[in-house]
Image (cartoon, rainbow, N blue to C red; front, side, top):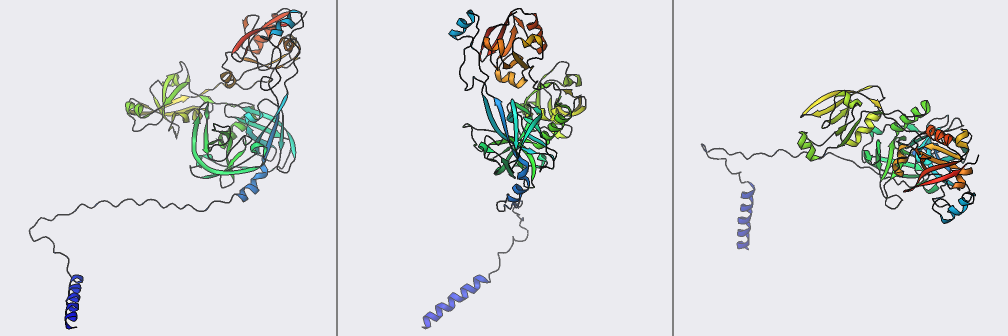
Length: 487
């Protein structure tokens, strides 16, 4: 017992000594002091609070009634599912023509129906939708959420931005509020309302994936990319922010299956409203141009031009005598900004220039010889090619005898068809139909004379005799079709 008490006392004294021990003394007097370098404190990460999922029901209840279903009736091309006919190249064609009958009469192409979405932007009945929703429509019907239906007039179409303006004869309609897409940031919630696959007023939600996204063939639209579920039938419907404001028009999807795969694109609403105002006021959209071709600035080009980082739009060609040429711009200049709007990527430049009214001056910030400079350019007009209504039978006695309704092709249509032709057959009957001319045929020449305008076509037909030889392009083939018009 005494031995255990002795060891306990020794253990207690050791413990108290350790607890009361003084820290080691500093260096001896006269010894050099060594101070360990102190690392700067690491920057604390910003505090980010992600709250619960939002409830969209109040937004949908307030603005859902302004979203409409747009149904159209179009004439379907016989080559896209219609019954095959007898035309040039068919063995029976020469038989019928040799005996003076021409090819058998073709019935008009069948009618097809299409559906999309749209939304009311003013109480007096103006609506916005996509141009491709109403393209070629013979009839447009707008159906409201309360099941009322209205026949709509197409006020104007702008194929470059895929915007169409409709008008219905109604008053005191529910309409949407317009927001500012410039305030959108990736990661923000957005909501789409539309008619996917015909299911009216379907609501889907997601986030903004990116802004100012440029797509091939759409240089004039800085798209909003989202992951909102958008499917066929959603086209033309609104994209809302959480404040209930429309910030875009759902227009395209990226898909390898034809259905939604998580990548959707919307047209910014400020661009759409600008197009709307111009179509209502003048029936066409004016866009600026400066006459340059551009390319992206990558890291290698950035290094070679002495830029601190890749940015801007590199000019690789200047149109002789164009606005940029007159302002002194040249190949090798990098456009860094238009006015106070920086150009981060080359795809942002066309929409910035297009938004400038032709005839006004714009100040460009450019990079030349490793120095930033300012250049003033008087912006020219981008010659748009609006879809011109077809010349109908009865418009002209010369073309009337052929039975053709012809209109100019738009630039986008020419690119899609890969044709040098400028005129397309929209409707056909009478002698031309008997000869085998079809809607969609591109007119290249009349009796060996190349034609590019309606006036040239009328003059060539008027100067022709009893048989008019039309050179047409159909698909990848060119062929002559003789049309017998009688005396």
